[in-house]
Image (cartoon, rainbow, N blue to C red; front, side, top):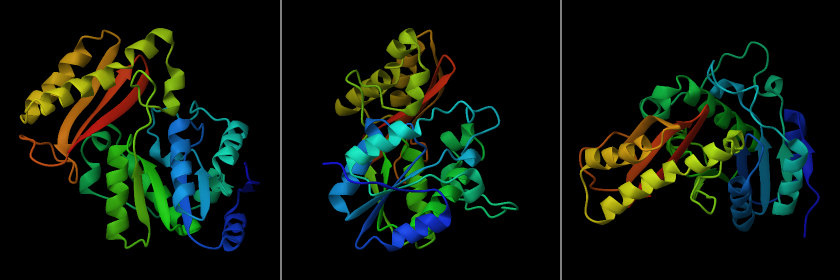
Length: 281
């Protein structure tokens, strides 16, 4: 059964609506154009919390100068319909002016963990992410916040921020939701044409090849990286930006796999940049 969803845009509306919610609150931060991956976070929050708040905000400060802010897909009516079905109680859809008022000059920055991987390729990206998430936490005051494992570095950085700044919030990291052929669900998949969509499974195939090697006893991190590189290189339409075999907690590149490890990569398929990862336990 769907429930009547509350919609707020201003900070005052959000805080007034938040006061009406008794009990635990789960927050699912999104940039909209929702897919099954987002909805899985909402359903998990619904199972674990008495109230569920979803934010929809395409955050301009996490996009670089050559990235796709203006082209980022948006469909608020569809999003609201999906969220109603999934059981969200309140949706906050602030404008950039609400989140970043005139004269805004205060930033939240996690330093070391944001330097490698996505941070090296997208300077300033994580400063935008951590600032907006800190503002969301401050505005919503959730009990728990839900993020997807697909953005593995983002979740690690947010967990570090929560520890460092003593936010009284539990971060829940939920599994990647994949298409039947293994492609990780992403709002950017809509940019792929038919041929590119077929090629896009190369990320999953490369990660799977490295995981198979690991399961056979391979612990040489450089060899695991090379295995992923070789799979990607066999696809002419795929252009590798990076592959990584790093310590899960510090994101430092490994020589040898000894504990919990993150295999991750960023690959361009045409002009569309895709990321994916596996966790090796």
